[in-house]
Length: 238
Ligand SMILES: NC(=O)c1ccc[n+]([C@@H]2O[C@H](COP(=O)([O-])OP(=O)(O)OC[C@H]3O[C@@H](n4cnc5c(N)ncnc54)[C@H](OP(=O)(O)O)[C@@H]3O)[C@@H](O)[C@H]2O)c1
Image 1 (cartoon, rainbow, N blue to C red):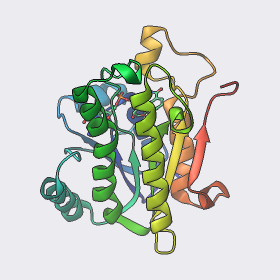
Image 2: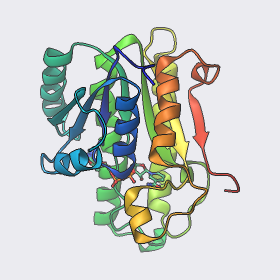
Image 3: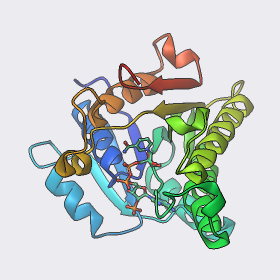
Image 4: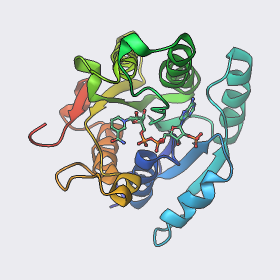
């Protein structure tokens, strides 16, 4: 379980339903994990979730990556001064918000907010984190399955997923010859704690920790999968 020993990995969205499970798995595999959140209070719930796990290698840091270039540079400098280069980065951010409606019913305000929360914030996060990675390091970005097809009833989310896929694969190609390695991981619905608590999680869905296992393999970089920038974790049957 110590396959990531000696590696330092930053997780953007570490307090989220998926991010907390990935954080747990990375810690269990021996990594030092730098968990980021915009809100200090959310770290409390992360620590409760992680009780029973050795958190000696967990560092929490309040940081907002969804900022203009000046604000992003301040976060970049804080991370650089404290940690130098990272071996890995995971980006599991975003929010559904009020986007549950047909495209024809999307207001200008909802459009702007959804693009900001689910596309601009991801671009800004990658723009900050990629230069912090060692050249042999790896960044894994998560997008939803609607990246690949129509998404009736929540199309504004679907189109941000499609754009994020393009964003990440382009960044991957732009760094192919120099490193770091950049991966897009497209996922179906996940058995987050919140979904389990609401009784809407199916037993065949992947757990956040399952994503963590695959992500730790990509960061280590010695599997066949690590040679390709695009990956899917969709539960059997859909
Ligand atoms: N859960 C699923 O089944 C599923 C399936 C497919 C795709 N996804 C996608 O995977 C991502 C994570 O999902 P989740 O279920 O873990 O969501 P979640 O529980 O709502 O967590 C989302 C995280 O994103 C961060 N975040 C939200 N907006 C942000 C912004 N503008 N800038 C920076 N950070 C921001 C939040 O961090 P703070 O602590 O800073 O608030 C939070 O920790 C989302 O993009 C979601 O759409 C999820």
